[in-house]
Length: 244
Ligand code: G3P
Ligand code: MG
Image 1: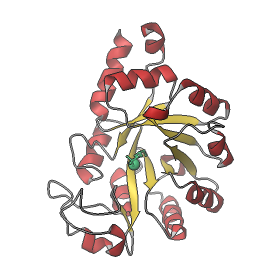
Image 2: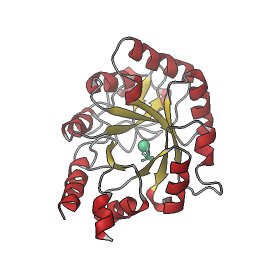
Image 3: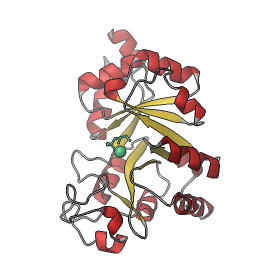
């Protein structure tokens, strides 16, 4: 009921692919708009290019840029010649870290991402150089083997185990991974899953939640945070709920 909702109308807001409703996803403008909305974190997608890591959702350039073909077949400089929307470039991982300048948490979702030793070394280098604090990095993936490898390599690293399922043993897979959080498709979120995760000491975040009805459902499940394409609107709605 509404009373319970208002009591719980506090949750973390993560900008999904930046503020991607109003700006091209995973670009500078989407990142800046998310920072301006004072989000609790920004989720972006990481792909391996030939020589670097770039911030783009798909394995192929085609949907979000005017380029064609696989991201991993080109180097970053070649990829940055394409238009990722409104004349913007596909960012590199380093550009993203620099733009954020430790203002908020970066949730780096590994997609088709390889050479993880190089990735781990880049994170370490940025922490040593005080460009970002360890607390502001959360690496997530549907590939739990990669998360397992990274946690072994960087024991301080917060990892988020992604799933679009309700496993028989609920959040056990994430506890086994020593994860910080589980990131669950909203369509597979329920209260039993959330309760189980919390008993295991895990944070629970739902993706991708933009509609008011879905926001209410996630609040009722007791999630700790949501990924939303429109953080400003979502924050506005939560504030309204709290005024009721
Ligand atoms: O990280 C949460 C969410 O972004 C996972 O799905 O396809 O939007 O990257 P996708
Ligand atoms: Mg993603």
